[in-house]
Image (cartoon, rainbow, N blue to C red; front, side, top):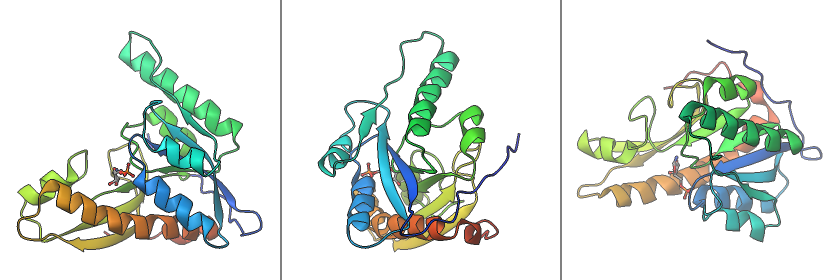
Length: 217
Ligand code: GRF
């Protein structure tokens, strides 16, 4: 069940880690990564952007930056399980084609099967809009508000077979203010994400083993 965990190599600024960013929506997180990358010498380089549809707004950010960006919609297969596995195969092929060394999920809204996770474990990273282990899943802000949280934030973590259960890499806190709507909290957390994610990716690319024994929660 717990497949092997393979970290990416230690990259350098002269030979940066080849990352693929995966999105489903507007891609503000992707934009923050591309912007960080364009100002200075970094340990990673975005070589590919993948979305699970051709309509994902964020594909435009990559195209503007001259990065190959591909929408891979679910294939037309009636059996849901087969459809999911085939979709992941198509994604995996593209990732291999681009010699991807690290996958960065930035608002990618699908859960990967253990088959896919086992191929990339240790080289598959996500950002989640809460302070995990609090509020995993697709409704983090709604759940934080319903719980009366006064602090929320975001978490960068390795992806494992569970939903938002992988090893924590970095977190950033954000206050929840009286009267916040889901949208207010989402925007405030996104600002923290945009500051945290690019520099965390850079730090992982420089020295991945630094993050593997840390279990801050
Ligand atoms: C982010 O809040 C991310 O944490 C969550 O989905 C949102 C994506 O936003 N998983 P965007 O598409 O990057 O604007």
